[in-house]
Amino acid sequence: MRVVSLLPAATEIVAALGGRLVGVSHECDFPPAVRSLPRVTRTTVDRALPSKAIDRAVAEAKRVGASPVEVDVQLVAQLRPDVLIGQSACDVCAVGEGELARLVTTLIPTPWVVTLHAHTLDGVFADIARVGEALELRDEAQELVAGLRYRLRRLESRARRARVRPRVLVLEWLDPPYVAGHWVPELVAIAGGDDMGSAAGEPSRPRPWGELAALGPDLVVVALCGFDEARARAELAALTDRDAQALLARRVEVIDGNAYTSRPGPRLVDGAEILSRLILG
Image (cartoon, rainbow, N blue to C red; front, side):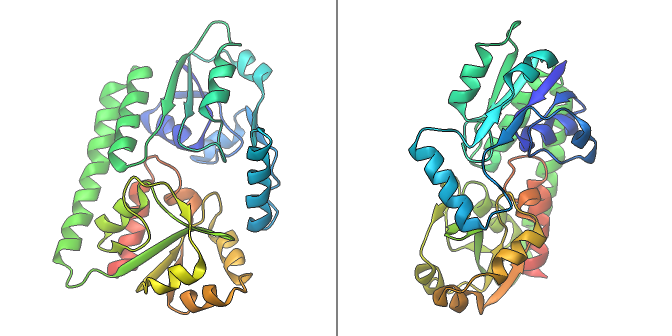
């Protein structure tokens, strides 16, 4: 089946299942082979801007009812997908549910539409099964999920043997500060920590620096949505807020949030393994 993916997590799921991708979003970069595929989306936001400016640009787009992500409808039509994969969790970095619905009405023949909407790890695994069903790769999806769950059980076993559970705060944006939600608190718990900023399934949300400093975490993990480790370190170095400095005087670790915590796909388990090494050593 010919698959067009409108978000990186879907691309990673399809690739892990052995599906045939013919088009991907502008954000898709893993596995490396997908980087040569046609890009069917583009963003109106300059990602080279500082994070505060990006946040303002996204807020302004929402205010005027514009989408930060645009679809090349003509290119999607030319690719003639049998399956089109979108999402309903976030309108910032990927095509939103409304835009997806409008896109489908323009396509002849009409593709099978799969909408990913995970907010928890179980939701991620359900989405993998949903993609496997659409691609007629049910056995591959079951095998993939079984392997991912096995790796998580090993981490949980290690965490149970640990003497302490460090207090952990995960930040997915720095200006303004956003606490990571959705599946991230589950990753922290599986890795052996107690998430101080959010609960499993809750959306990521902004919180003031002073409030975050008052939480007194043992470990602050900077895992920025859409940014790799190098960009995260640059954003971190640019912070001047006094309360931010008070929080970041604690132990701080930076990881590639774009790869390992922001995308609801198979590499979340890699993220849990990274967190386990940071939390438990």
